[in-house]
Image (cartoon, rainbow, N blue to C red; front, side, top):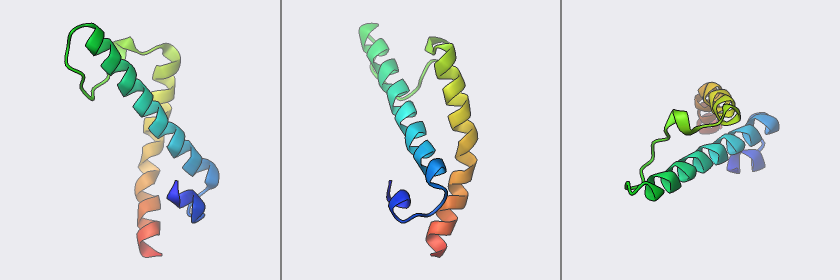
Length: 79
């Protein structure tokens, strides 16, 4: 991520945001494949009941971390 290269924020936090983004993309893609297999048009919503316990836990943790993105963006805009 560009913020990692510019060293804004904790490197571990920024790497975590990248992982969170990858998780979201993976979950949406998996859902789209399920939708297509069911004859439905693919969308961008994920059905919670299709998630494994591990995926649900990872998604909850990712969503909990999203509050600090606004702080990082503010810091980036000020610099």
